[in-house]
Image 1 (tube, rainbow, N blue to C red):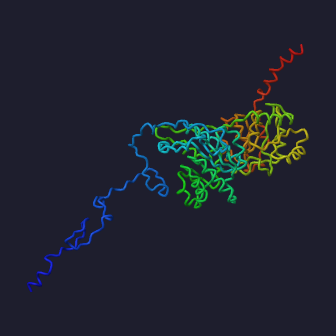
Image 2: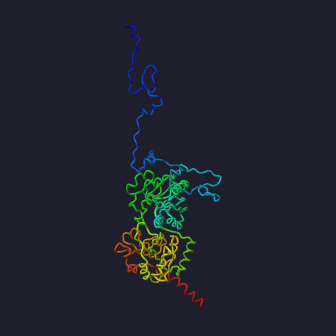
Image 3: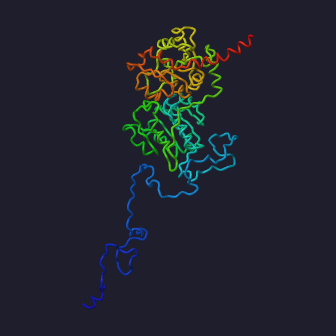
Length: 479
């Protein structure tokens, strides 16, 4: 029995709930391998940080804990607006426009300070709609220009909308690509996507109502910040996770918002940032080149009118795409029979009928007469030049009203209802714009007598100043 007792081990240690990190040689106990047992496992976990501020989507950045208010920035992270781009200018001898660095230099990598400050060196605006919608986006482009000094702004718009940017000096390039086309060719889709990726944008802004498809298109541009409107219904599911900032539209048709249709985006673009105050929204302004003025001057002189002595009539009913009406107001064109009655009320000025297509010329001459002054205008730039040399404008809710307000010309706006008039022409009295609305809710029922009573807004004395100034010179030459 003694011999048997000496063969048994003296003691057997009990199994431990928390085995040591280093396995024991004398005891046959289970222990974790060293690579599975980290020293931090024995430390208490840190509590999670919860913030009340608006946080980016978890899908975009799961480690985003928002900005630290106690962080002190050095010289590279100074407050205030960004400075002009310090990079050298583009090489004029380079045949490739997408290479944005001179010959013999390597590609510049954006610094971390530029990203932290949120500097925007290149911005792309994708605008949905036609001429009217692109024209109302001009204040947003000027706001981006004021907020980010030295920024290069490009525009992607429909072929009609692209014509608008010949009146905007802040736009570098304007490409024709209709974002509203749901049946776009795959080759065109990939070509535009490759074009946007090769320009390395810091900010992409879109006014098209985005679902998952359009949000994915913006995500694939590789831009740092992607901002867009989204659908107000279930069609917006999944779009917000691919966007940096999104705005839920008030309705399915953004153009129904009128002049302030982009108020959500303008509020975000002009937001205060650190020491920068809120950027004010500039008014709508357009610029007209000398070449454009010369072309239009030849047109209206061939029609038999002189500068400052005619009234522009715009909004003739036609199936042409050059009518320049808003998508938010489909009842905004009048037949030529109604315009003929309005033209009869004009005194002291010559009414000029603007036609969007040459096939309308015969209809105007047949109803108004062969001596009617007719000008064929298809682009918004030519229309702006025609309005700039006129004494005023009488138009329905087309781009002509907004161009007259931008050039500070007196105008009479014809609307189908008072609600539409307040939406599209706010503060009409300050803009020297007389509003005439229909009492039945249909534009065709507008009262011509109300238009006659509003003609006093046109200053007749301004057109006669030139005649009175030339009278003494003529008398002297005759004597």
